[in-house]
Image 1 (cartoon, rainbow, N blue to C red):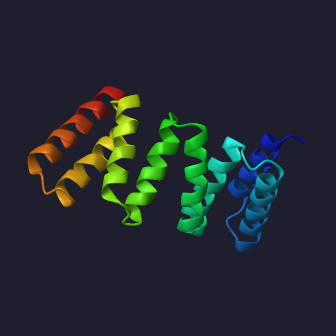
Image 2 (image 1 turned 135 degrees about the vertical axis):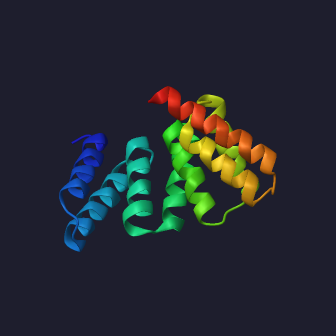
Length: 146
């Protein structure tokens, strides 16, 4: 098996089962895939997503996202998920904003990140005007994608 197959298998394990036993199998499959090829981008991202969403192991997920972003610094979904995770953790607002701005540089119509920038502008910067601009841009982008 090539490493990407292992990542695929672990992803399927997650899809199939919701119980702790299948979750344990998925985590074990990710651990093995990562041990086999610690730089496999798909394994890094899928394992980070799994840890973040299913296990709420945010510190480990952050580390995996960081490695993935080093490998593919222009991967919009990975940057977006990484920024959102840091934001949820109450991470450095400047870093979160920088990550989200990078996403918008790559994908100016990214509705999810435009919404997150609106929230950051309002809650952290207390800038209602900027928040409104991001919010309006997210609505326009959402209408275009419908």
